[in-house]
Length: 124
Image 1 (cartoon, rainbow, N blue to C red):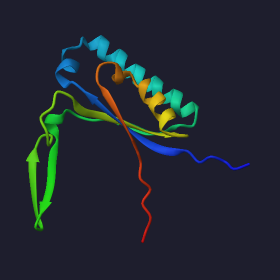
Image 2: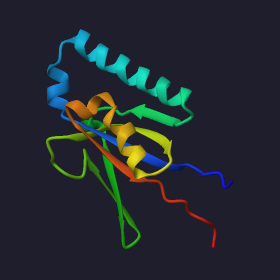
Image 3: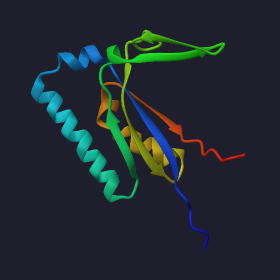
């Protein structure tokens, strides 16, 4: 019987930072606890690779290289209501399973979770 090798999917978590800042401290703590519990659930199932929360989008620096010159811009590259707030790297059998996992990420209720397969690069 052929063993199925799980694929990796990056779940990019987008949040409305203004809405998040307006939450009572206790409610924000509860959401963080839910995230940590979700990570533990994935770890127990062997689907967890890593995760991290990000600092506010206002701390971002966007880097571009054009004609050999580096340019930087403070802040995110686009003005949007929702900003990238963190990520979870998971292993799943397929996209359908990855979507089911992403739907259980607590921030999906008030924000959005983008699911993208991780491309495996090989040396030429």
